[in-house]
Amino acid sequence: MQTLNIIKIGGDIINHELRLNQFISLISEIKTPMILIHGGGKLLDQFATQLGIEQQMVDGRRITDAATLALATMVYAGGINKKIVALCQSNGIQTIGLSGADNNCLQAHQRKIGEIDFGFVGDIIKEGVNTKFISLLLSQNIMPVFCSITHDNQGQLFNTNADTLASVLAQAMSSYYEVQLMYCFEKNGVLRNVEDEESVIPNINANEYKILQQQGIISQGMIPKLDNAFAAIEGGVCRVIIAHALNILKSQHETDYVGTKIIR
Amino acid sequence: MQTLNIIKIGGDIINHELRLNQFISLISEIKTPMILIHGGGKLLDQFATQLGIEQQMVDGRRITDAATLALATMVYAGGINKKIVALCQSNGIQTIGLSGADNNCLQAHQRKIGEIDFGFVGDIIKEGVNTKFISLLLSQNIMPVFCSITHDNQGQLFNTNADTLASVLAQAMSSYYEVQLMYCFEKNGVLRNVEDEESVIPNINANEYKILQQQGIISQGMIPKLDNAFAAIEGGVCRVIIAHALNILKSQHETDYVGTKIIR
Image 1 (tube, one colour):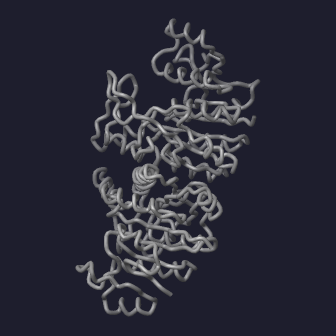
Image 2 (cartoon, each protein chain N blue to C red):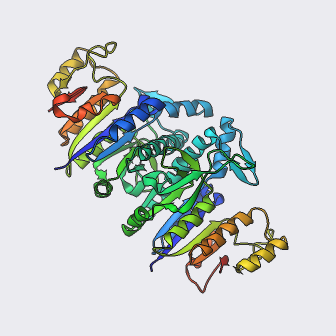
């Protein structure tokens, strides 16, 4: 099977003009098919503050009321997505920017109200991914760039966690490609000591992950990302790499990993 | 050649939840290939006011500074575009929302500074339309929905007049399809008396247009729209119809025009 790189880019890359330029320039050298995924929570927060739309977070997850969903759709699917698309095109990458609503690429269902009512937050499963259309684009040498807006195919848009979206998309595409899922952000990988960028843990398997959590070495923000990473591996993805966005080219060679590799 | 409907929808339809629902429900009955085009100036104005981004208009045309372009990209390519896409999908229309940057669908150049500096306003020509990719989508039974954001393929996004965009796109697609261009808005057509919705002028040719302008019957806001309509006819488009959005189905039958028909 052909290799497919599914690359989630974090907010610190998106919001930093120079780094984003560098990152897009780097990925233009990758010759295997690619899919990009982005959110944009920091920019959303900025606009929400300016517009007086109060934001509520629970354990780092956003409660999405109607006004926040409308704004997220503008910021993610509009502002950020088209900026990335235009940059990619100028770097010679044929690119199409998509939300989950577009041609029903990512169908989700609204998260059930449990202890918390997350509002218009959508959860997706593998079966909700339009692998046929995404494969058609890839076969035409077009790179899809997904923002983290999904829908229910009944007219309702949703806000979906971009890390989770990347994981589920990667699992779905694993039926057709040898998928490498990359979480690219502003850190060098999963760190033993968050203050020390040199303390990258090169490999983590499921058992080690449990131990690292018990020891408190992996905590808070990194846990959902690693949960998504292990879900991807469980779901058929070949490799998950968590790395600094500007180390992405080095991550393309199996012998030369820079960052943290998640293994079975 | 196969018929292709290229339909520009105006702001009063976009901003009115019920009318937009009705409109999308109506077009779901059209079985020929379609392309939708929208702008969203009114919603842009609302957000610009809230965010304190001053708007400058010259003869009804927007001066687009960097902040306005960023906001237009959010509102047009994000908020409005994805709302329309989600609605179309829920009405059984396979739809993909696009800006001109996506896969270089609509390449433009920045308007030269003349008497007025329009800022990040892009003008497109027929040759800037990616007819190959648009035709691929249509052949897959996918309806493209274009917002009026274009780019120069060098990384710069532009704000482009949606009526003009529709006209140029229609001209470009006329090499492959028998194109019917429809300007759908909140009026019944081009009116002899703007106060009287029953005073629709059923047909206008170029000569009659000149006379109607000289008589002051057609003025101000309608002139750029009709200029775009006649440019489309000159450029190979079969029919241009200016009609109320909710009369769109009646406009599909040549013997049953509702609205104003622009003829050679």
